[in-house]
Length: 628
Image: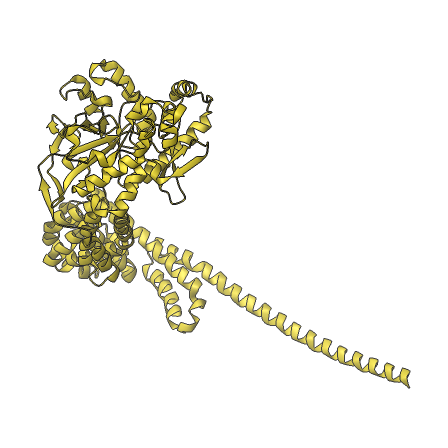
């Protein structure tokens, strides 16, 4: 019973499986037949479509324009009859239309280019083609008519050429519908050419705001073609300018250039009157600005060297050196800034005193400062970090922290390497401005002068520096160096990164000669020439254009001297000498200013009493020498 039952069920399953197999086989066969028919049908369509474009082009080549147009319109009708929801089926047909339109475009463009370039007179065959191909040629010719009118407006083509172009094409078919209105406006287009070109020049220079203002101004005075063109340009420029202009303005706010930001966001508020972000940024800018006036008084210039950051090394026992008298401590420098701020001084950019756009002639410019403020220029002298100053407790080099801020790096008396923003005058001044944004006028910081002697910012950036560096290291009982070309290239990259960060935050740069020539006034011209070439090649190449020169020890050369003329001819236009009292003068293609040297030795000068209170400045750490 059990065996029989098992056999019975097995037989039943076999019959069911057999029946399912036959059904599946029939379905597969039908599917294959349908697939074959579909493939054959699609294949016939593809073959037909493949013949379309060659047939169209052949008809044009043979002058059978009606046949060509019929082929094009036939495909176009098929596309138009297709249900909008099934437009994906028309992809290949639309490609055919594009190919046929491109064939006509190439031929029309060739004719138009020939007319423009060589005053080509249309033949009967040309006229027949342009007229017979109806809407296909009409659309292309209309585009070319607008384009040549734009070129005329932009000053790219002369009026007689434009007139000849229209004379050749306007009588054909329905081209006159486009040509005649443009012909009537040619005189208006010609009148607007100057202003439009001014707008385009500004745009080419990245001055979006001037471009929009000029185009808007032109649009207010013209209708028709010129007005339409201006509206399109304004719309296009606005779409292009918004993001970079906002980024630029927000960066101005971050770097304390509030006066520039106020102007920028005021202009943007006119162009984008509904933009709330612009309104908010404008409010931020104006909350940090005040009335500005022209300033015609003295311009105070103070100068410091590297700062003493580790007073234990500088002033304690066997480490103490009389050279520390040449340097201020970080505490003394910060207290000087506090005193200057309390006395209403404000940091300014000396380049605002000149217009140096002409390399052969310098124009005086009246300095502007916030009302009630007095201008101040800060110079940091020869920031190359020579090894012989290590025992004075100064930094050894500049570095960037994780926030891309410039910091000083030094080794303290315990041998630990310390990195700090406030270890050097750069970071101290930066953080002081962060606390007191009104201490800078439009983001100005200071001027850093650099030589090529030993290093730049503490990095050996050329093979010429190695011997001098090693001599200084030996004198300081430190191991010598033997950098490879790759290591020097790496150092140059580090300096370049630091320079980029400093520039971005309002700092500027000056040369103090490659060899830090102590007495330029009594140095032969050829020595200065050779020195300058080295500075420009090895140091200046890291800083970009540098227009300022700080004479070491203040030993300046008179501006009419042939050696000074050489400096001016190589891009230097602002020169700093030395003097305890403020002084500046314009000369033949240059500006000269005296700088007051700030050191422990000079702090008691009577001339400095208006700047700070000496008793508030001196760092108590200096009293260790006297055992106080």
